[in-house]
Length: 275
Image (cartoon, rainbow, N blue to C red):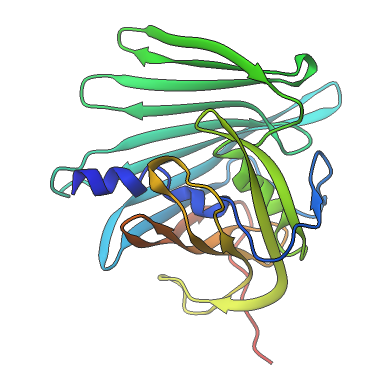
């Protein structure tokens, strides 16, 4: 069970942003994104992860703050991934942090894995002015730097968390796009298809269907922990563009991720009105 859990739990929140393919890619996004969505500092979204009828854990995604530097806005975001207690042989806790630049690409990423005896970290510093990505990996308690290296950066990249927010920006546009990503120390492209159609999605805890727009497709590469294959995800049809439900494929089968609770001032999931 522990081996299976490690395959899909750490990257379950990737359902929001992993490589998608459906129709031919129309354009590569290298900076421009539609300015129709809004992120709120203090927003907190909590999701339940389930495999068949078994609830495995939760993912919590937070917009921590935003800063304006020389007239440009940067967002600091964080995601916590934790298994539930009581699941035999499983105790997994991960943290992702991302600083999103004004083009909604990554300027910094940190991945933290809490193990029984120590904690590991992976940091990416995207130095676009120097056309470099600096990579630092090691552990804490006590601190030990394992690697400190660089690779070229001929364009801007998404990391494992920033692309979630990028997908929220693109939701509902109807665009088919190709986005450069830096994942697991590899340069890859994420193909995203966004539909314009609005449909109703049911979630536990709400007595109405939520108005959502769909993203779907297939990964065209194998990511860490074996994440690959067909993907479906639904984002709310409003300026918040909150991910509500997703289904993804991992090596051992299908996993569902569903919105459990939210904190966003003045916001509730929009109701789907049937004609």
